[in-house]
Image 1 (tube, rainbow, N blue to C red):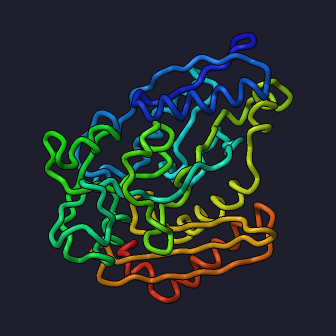
Image 2: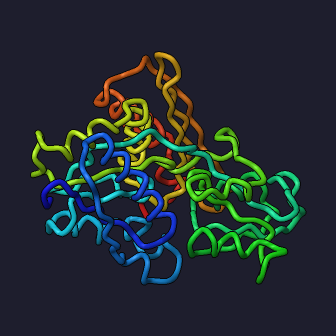
Length: 314
C-alpha cells in the first residue's frame, strides 16, 4: 500500500466495477484512506463455453488472487458465490459487507412470471443449480446455456434484438447493484428456487501479511457484517463438506432471524428429476458454530445419498 491510498483489483465488467467501487468507497470512508481501482483480466473473461466445463466460476477469482499475493494490489473484491470454498495460503477474507438480496430473479418478456411462461418457453441460464431447479419446477421449459455480462443476457429476451429467449434467470443482487431491478418480472422465492451459497455477498480479500493495525485493516473490519458472515459461513460449509464446486446443483439460503440461524439446502439431480431438501435452525451461533452447523447438515445429506443424486463424485 502506497501512503494513504490502497489499490483494489477488479474484473472489468460493469457489474464487477460497480461492486468493487461500492466496496472500496465503504472501506475508504471507514478507514479514512483513499483508493484506486486496478482492472484485472481473468481467465473466465477470455475463455468461452459453459462455466461448468471451465472449472466453475472460480476461474474469475484466480487472477485477482494472484495480484494480491504478488503485492500488485492491496485488496480484491469478489462475488462470494464465485469463490471456491478452499482457503488460499497467504490470503485472508477480512470483510463480508452486509449482503444484498440473495434471491434469483426472473427477467421475462411481457412481464411474465415463472408460472405464466408458456409451455416450451426458452429460458436462459449458465448455472447447473438453476437448470436443475428449473427442470424440477417446469420440466416443459427449454433451458438454454448462456454466457456474457448482465446486459448481454438481458438483451436476449424477446422482443429485444436478437430476442431468442423468453426469459433469463439472474442474481437479483447484480441487477439491483446495476439499477436494473425494473427488468425483474419475478423475484424467485427461496422456497421455490434456492440461491447459490454466498449469493448476494461480497468478499473482501487481502494478503495475510496485511498490517493488522493499519488504516486499511481498520476500514475492512468496520464494514464486516456479522449476520452476513454467519449466514454465508453456514452456506459455504455445506458446499465444502459436500466437496461440491461453485457450479454444482446445490442451493442454500441461511439467515439470522432474531436469535436463530436458519438454513435451507437443496441438492438436485442435474436433470431435475429428483430433489433433496433440508431445513434446520439453531440458536444464533458463533462463526465456528455456524460452520459446524453447515457441515453437519451436509453430512446428513451425504448419508442420504446427496453425492449420488447430484453426481458430485463424477
